[in-house]
Length: 125
Image (cartoon, rainbow, N blue to C red; front, side):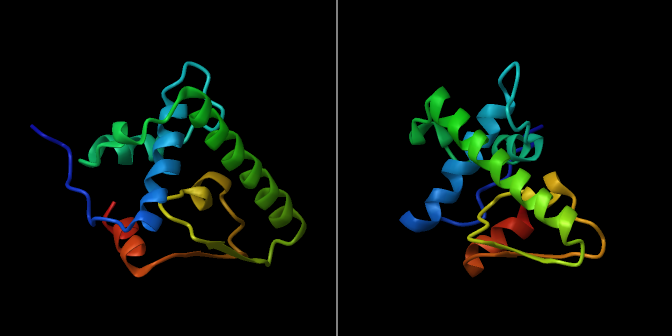
């Protein structure tokens, strides 16, 4: 049985950058000692038919992507710890799963903002 699903859209060059960061986080997750450990990114990449190999993501690039995401997660977590009633806006969220990684308090609001096609892809995936 094939558990892969087709890519929900064909992105513009600008929107294609969302695949780069998603795939970088997925490749980090496959390392013996992942930095970020984004299992959802890995699951999404495995289920889509997007050929991420054409991105030529080196191991060092995947590590850099994971470090950047981890640092941004830490900043958001610290802010939410000090301001539990905050409103979080992830502008240009792409296919990022930050809100699931940081688990904001129930008193905070979180919004992932992006192009309509990207948001449709998020819902699909």
